Each structure stands twice: as structure tokens, then as C-alpha cells.
Length: 435
Image 1 (cartoon, rainbow, N blue to C red):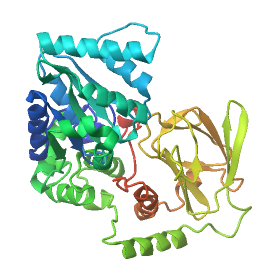
Image 2 (cartoon, rainbow, N blue to C red):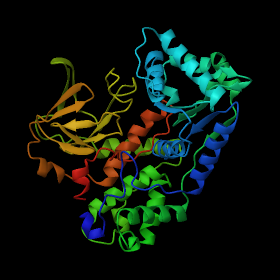
Image 3 (spheres, helix red, strand yellow):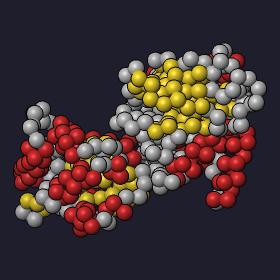
Image 4 (cartoon, rainbow, N blue to C red):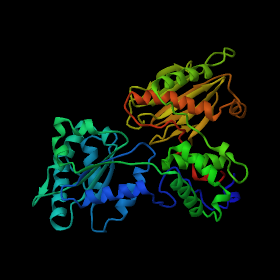
């Protein structure tokens, strides 16, 4: 559906960057109270946890924007950061543009700044996102910062953020300076049914729609809540895809994707077997597709897509593990259905590109060039030469979501809380205007 047909001047359900409009709800207010109390506490150190796409980053950004102008803060994504990278990121956000010759100089500069701020204004706030993914040496630096004091007050307020439980990290003996200072722990909750409707309508109004209920009716908002579990990031993605599917207003319930979540392990294994059967490649043709992984012109690996799905990422649990800081832990997913192959970006930090075009999901054909981080993947399938024909090969929502449920089993081995939904984080602005 064209945005104009829905009365919209802007895409309301942005899946990357700053939201068009900040919408409060009860769980978010509870999170605000937790962040405010932690920041006001002289010893404040809190754990802020919630699954992926639960709105943690949006809440943190809005909270820091409410701080007085003279207050110093830094919000750093800790995924894969070592000591040097962590300290450089912190100093940069504290306003320093200096070059230091050693880790000790970096650490001392952070400590001096923190103690000066605590003594004269207020202790600076340091928010570490993806705390679970910090390099151990960087965790040790956090312990050192946690022990800094000025006249009995801690010199750094700390908020450790993660999409999974980090209690095992905090409780480790080496992390005693953190655990001893811990003042609170918060687990972010989802929107309830009424809040989901308010959230959707507020976003539509912010995008310029005067009658949001005529675009997404109440009963469809209920379907959005059920399908998303009430998590705002997932609501945005499902609403965006629903607008794309609907040719005319209003959006219907059957435009909403519905993740299938098994109630227990036995159901999950049964679902996995069904996926394997449904996605078994056809026996006809010239054999299964191949992919070739390259880096700087050198061929690193060659794999055959002779399975229902192939997961790509930095983690060792992936089918294709690429050890690079530019690759996300779980970066992209190939899904086979009949004779066709579907590539899906998994909310990766640096994106997935097909023939130099950033994609969120894409049917791939013979000799497509895929870029992930600083690596290239060439896709070979002589039987797939017409993209429009392959796109009509029957990739239903159920097939895709069941494939993501398959992937969920891999993520579970790493104790993640990833949710099995398609990622649409990387849609360019010019495409959003055509939805």
C-alpha cells in the first residue's frame, strides 16, 4: 500500500534509527523509574534486561535526553569490545578528542574525569549495552570503575544492559566489585492489549494519518498484539509488513504474520521435523545451490545448501561461522523451499547486501553477490535465473516463520531470548515511501 493511500506523510513504523514519535506505556514507565532511581542513588548500579526488540534502546535514549545539560553520560554498545575500544568509546562520548599511547592512559583519563564530575557536578552515567558480549578484559575495567569513590559516593553510575540474563557474569568471583554495588535489577515487560492499540494509533497519527482506525482496525490491532507478544519492536515490523501486503485500506487480520511458538520442547522438536520435511529441496534440477565465501579476493569456504536452512554469523553455533568483528553473532539466514532460496537479514549491525543493495529479505538467484560485513558470498544455482519466477515459488509466512523457529533452537543453545520473526530493520527510506 502506498503511504499516501493510508493518509501518511511519513513511515510511522520505522525499524531503524530514531522513532518518529516516542510513545509511553506502563512497562516503559516502570523502566524509567528504575533508571531514574539508579541514577539518583549514590551507589547506583543496575541491570536492565529485556529480549531483543523490546524497546530497551529507545527507552535508554529517551532517558538520557531528559538529563540536565551539565550531566555527562555515555551509552556504549559493548558487543565484542576489548578494553581499549571500550575506553575510547567512553572518552569520545564524554567529549574527549585526544590520543593516548596506552590502555593505562585511557583508563586514567576516564577515572580522572569521573572523579572531577562527581566532586563538582554529578557522577557521570555509563550505560553498557550487550554487556554479556564484552571481552573479559573490558569487564575488568568496569570493575575498576565500579570501585571509584569520591567522599563515599561512587564516581560512576552504571547501567548494564542485556537481552538475556547476565546474573552468571555478575555473580562470578572476579566481578565482586559489580555484584557488591548492585542496587537493582529490572526486566522490561511488553505492552498489554489496550496499550498495543494506543501504540499503533499514536504512530499512525504521528505519520500524518487522521483516522488510524480506518487503516488498522481495532480487531487487527488485537492480532498485532497476539502475534508480537506486545514487544514494540516486533509490533513495528509486523505493522510495516502488513501495510506492505495490503493493497487497500483497511489492513486485514490475514495481513499479520503470526509466529508459531511451541509450548514445550517436544512440540518444538516436532515442529522442527515438519520444517525439515516441508523445506526439503526438490529432487529435480541440477542439484542443490552452492555458496562460496570470500575475503579480500581469497576463497575461504564452499558449502552446498543441501539442508532446509543455513545460518551465518560470528558465533560458533552457526552453520557458516565467520570470525570477524564486522559480522553479527547471528547475521543472516538462508531458507530453502522447493527449488527456491530465500535470504533473510537477522537484525545484523552492519547489514546484508545483495548485489550492493541492502536487504531485509530477498529471494536469491544464480550468481548473486552477497555482502556480509567485510566478506563476500557468491550464490550459485543454475536452476534459479529468473527472480520474479522464484519470488512466486510459494514462500508463505508459515514457511519463513517455521524456518525461524528452526533457527530458534540454535539460539537456545546459547541461552538467548531471540524471537522467531523476520527482521525488517534494513529497509531504505526510498523503499519505505513505496509501501
